[in-house]
Amino acid sequence: MKNDQLFWQKLVQGDKKVVEEIFQLNVPVLFKYGRRFSDDDRLIDECILHVFLDIWKNRLQLKDEGQIKLFLMKKLRQKIESKEQGTQLRRA
View 1 (cartoon, rainbow, N blue to C red):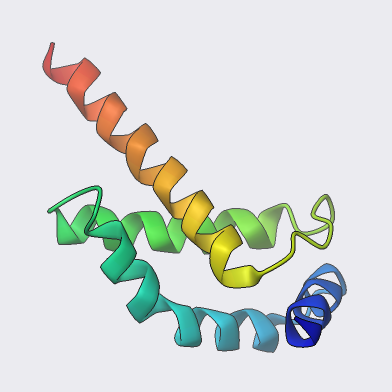
View 2: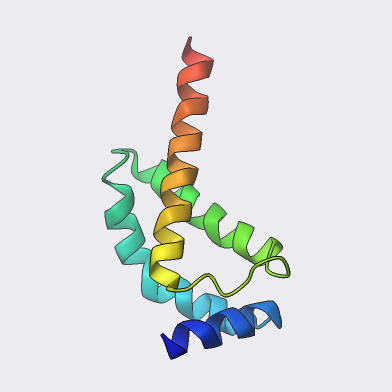
């Protein structure tokens, strides 16, 4: 938990290295988690990247969101569901 608090602090300070480290540590878990919601590997990869881009872009508005892994998983699920809903709407 202490490492998570440090992550949020360094993120707000603009530390790119900590974001890269969190990315490297969590991508395998996030990808596996993403497979629960989609069989499209490319979509999952894209959503993971967008989650991290959004975090970086909005870092000044973020607060200590608690456990990083849970936060990332929640954001990934939202992103995948949003993308898949958009795809379904375009097909209709």
